[in-house]
Every structure is written in structure tokens, then in C-alpha cells.
Amino acid sequence: MSLKEQLQSIIIKASELAKTWPSEKSEDMKFLTNYAYEKGWYLNEVFIFGLHHSITEYEQFDDAVIVLIEEDWDFYWKALAEYQPARAHLFEEIKKAHMLGLYGASIHLCFSQADGLFFDKFGTGLYGSRFSVAKSKFGVEINEFISSDSLELLAQHYKDGSILRRMFNETYNEILSKTDGDLVKDTNKIDENNLHLPNRHGVLHGIHTGYVNRVNSFKAIAFLLFILFSLDGERILKSV
Image (cartoon, rainbow, N blue to C red; front, top):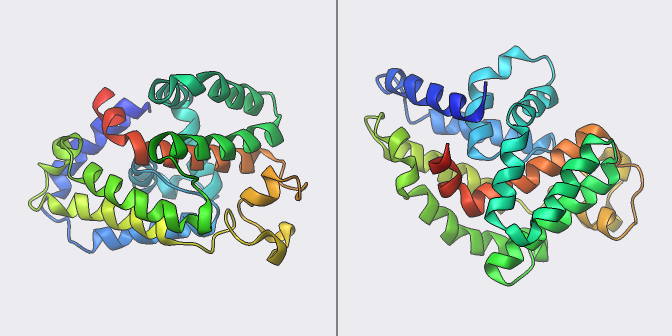
């Protein structure tokens, strides 16, 4: 199912769920995003919804997320290029590298370009102080996104439209508040073999060498998309 079809399906289901949707569902979403985080995945709102409705179809959690990425593969790269055309050639290199099995190159570029997107917006680095700076910067951005008109089409189907907004607000901020994840851990205090997601410092500074595989490349791409949706989710949802 394409991203557009997926969102249309969600909207239809939302009208049915509205009659029985309790506020505790936001806790379900937070549980899902926290579970994914522990597995090395950063979930944007499309992935949160998609996994919530289809996770039981897959034996492995990694497979469930990868399918969501692959279903709308070209769409995501287009969204990245449209958001920041100056980086389009670099996003294309990530895409090509992944498809050619050059996973080390794709992971390296994902981490650097996520940082670049953040810098373009806020004029400061994404990874500084283990996301503490990013948390404060994104806090304002996310709150504006949650209250934007882009979610009205979904929110209007709920008796209490604030449930949907609160759900995204809580889940995004909770993940961005975490400063102990594999991505930003102190490289000197970790064992590379026990990471669920490549360590950014270990990758970009050439300290680690064992992170190169397909699943880790998808995780790096998911992180890049997480940053994209945090910055440009409103326009992306309006475009489908």
C-alpha cells in the first residue's frame, strides 16, 4: 500500500475508532515508539500509524519497519530533495549507495545529512550535548507542527481532536528527550558489538568498523526521515 493509500485508509479507520478511542491509546503509541527506539529505530508519525495497524503481520520488528520504508521508497527521497534542493545530490547518493549494497556509505551520509538539515534550519549542530540542544530547538518546532492544519483531516474524526495532537507531541518529545541512545552514546564507553543502531561519533570519525549491514542502513535512513518529518511533516502530509 502506498503512503497516500495508507493515510487514506487511516482516515477511514479513524472515523470508526473515534467512538471507542481512549486517551490510553497515546500510551500505546509511546510504548511503540519507545520499543522501536530500543531496537534502534526512530519512527516518524507515518511509521507510528503504519506499525500500529500492521505490526502483527511480521515476525521480526525490523522487517515491519523496512516494509514501510520500501513501500514508498521513491516518495521519501523526493520529499527530502524538495525540502532541501541544495542537498538533493547527496540524498540521491544515499539512495544509490543503499541500493548498491554500499551500506557504510549510506549510513555515513545519513548521519551527516541529518545534521545538515538541522543546521540549515537552526544554525547549530543536531548531535551536540547528546540531543539536548536539538530537544530545545525541536520543542518549539514540534508544538507548532502538532497544532497545524495538516492534522485537521485526521483530528476532526476524533471526539477529542487533542488526543491525536497530544499523542504526537508526547511521542516525538519523548524520543528527542532521550540522551542515552546508541546513536549519541559516548563512543569510549560502549561496545560496538552491542549496539542496536550505529553510533554517530563512531561512524563519522572512523572509530567503528562493524556497523556495515543492510538493516543498519535502513535504520540510518529512518533516522534521517525522522528528522525530515520533524522539520517538514506539515508539507509532506499536505502533499499526499
